Amino acid sequence: MKAHTIIGILLLVLMPAGILMHCNKDVVSKTNDKSVYENPEAAIEERVNDLLDRMTLAEKVGQMTQVDYEFLQSEGDIAKYYLGSILSGGNSEPPDITPEGWAGLYDRFQRQALKTRLGIPLLYGVDAVHGHNNVYGAVVFPHNIGLGASGNAELVEEVSRITAKEMKGTGVNWNFAPCVAVPRNERWGRTYEGFGESPELVKTLGAAAVRGLQDDYGRESVVASAKHFVGDGATTNGEDQGNAEISAQELRDIHLPPYITAIEENVGTIMASYSSWNGEKLHGNKFLLTDVLKEELGFEGFIISDYRAIDQLPGDYKEQIAASINAGIDMVMVPDRYREFIALLTENVEEEIISMSRIDDAVRRILRIKFKLGVFEHPLTDKSLTALVGSEEHRAVGRQAVRESVVLLKNSNDVLPLSTDINRIHVAGKNADDIGNQCGGWTIAWQGSSGDITPGTTILEGIREAVSDGAEVTYSRDGSGAAGADIGIVVIGETPYAEFEGDRESLALDTEDIATINRVKDTGIPVVVVLISGRPMIVEPELENWDAFLAAWLPGTEGAGIADVIFGEYNPTGKLPHTWPRTIDQIPINYGDPDYDPLFPYGFGLSY
Image (cartoon, rainbow, N blue to C red; front, side):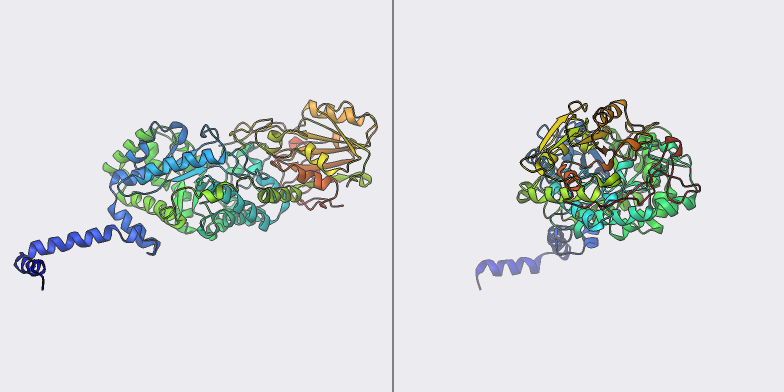
């Protein structure tokens, strides 16, 4: 036996029992530091419990805090305040909005989080509501109203899966989508974010979107967020952030079912609504957030607030924080006054206005999702996915989604489909050659914008690509120059808007659109009207002068899909996800109403 071994044994024998026990405890503690929460083989709840036990109050409060990138005062604050999440709001983006630019920002922020004592990684959230729409060059899919017209759950799941893959190619791992609102009044500017007026349609497609985004939390998946809980599609007069003056029965029958199916698909997060239910703001409604959502429905993920939404609750900021957390909000989208939020939330806990058990429940839910997502094991951008953003394979799915979203509403004398060998087509209208207009809101910028904002194919370009070599396609925005053409295609409708800015008292066509159509029609040629819009619009009495009418919604970047329908490459299958009113005075009008007399009923759609 070697001398140092003998000495070691003698020291152990002679060492007092208390010291020996203390040394063993240190060894066990050090061993545990590298086990359980850091062990990907351990059960998720074991990892959550182990990590939660190690956390200070400051670390827990940090996990409950989400800051907008735009307002982050120092990148070092991510580590200093143990922040749980960063978001990029609609207008909050890196200087370089290419996939590589986004990935660089994400990785830089994530490395700050990993520097903390416990190394808890960030969730980074964005509103990728129709593709990864904040990224230049990403595929922009049809907004949900168009996917609702497709009625195709498998397509919605695939669109969502591609969206997740493109997100992960930029590092971003949390999507504030799908919107599972059931819009019941088309004056609401967020109508296009919902799949349709029927809870059956929304619950089916919303569940498909969750499946596609989360995909069993694989390496190419993100965390989904069903929003906005609950009844945001039922506000009086379609007012954004308004008051849903409806009974508990109507809330349960129409607006709650999509959340039930989302929870059945294990949706990771749910976002509370700005709106009120019979005068009470949802962000302070403990009955709905805790009693119904968490306890009755068994939701095990976490509830995220909306942007500055707790600020709308009664009282001062400290009272607003207490009211929202005690109601059931687990993470707060602050997004700017985060240092004040952290200080006041801490005071609320220290003064026992918010219990430690409520804090632990919130943090437990947040950690559970982070472990499920695998962000502890794979915190940084998977660069192998970056090159797939905007790929031809993904654009092909986008084109198919556009094809299936188009609803043929009128086709007099079978004017459609057109022959690709037609002599001359005259295309007109403000939305015929404008990527920004056909994408709508939530595209590059929060409210969206007109113009050449991101790569894609306009409807005019799609038509030019579809025709034979000998055919001529001419274009004018105002409809001039149509004389002598065989047919006119006029692309009209709305220009981009998003929440709040999109609320409308009137849904009439604008005078520019009507004048453009009439200018083409006055030449004596047949006219096909393509409407780009986020909702049904009032088209009577102009409709009687149109030979064909297509509702194309907000199709995104792949405008060739509309040309595919016009030329019969795809026989239209889209069906109306909303009842189409005759007059603005009929709104709200929904299937099942008494005296139901629409221009086109819910579910209507022609084929060739």
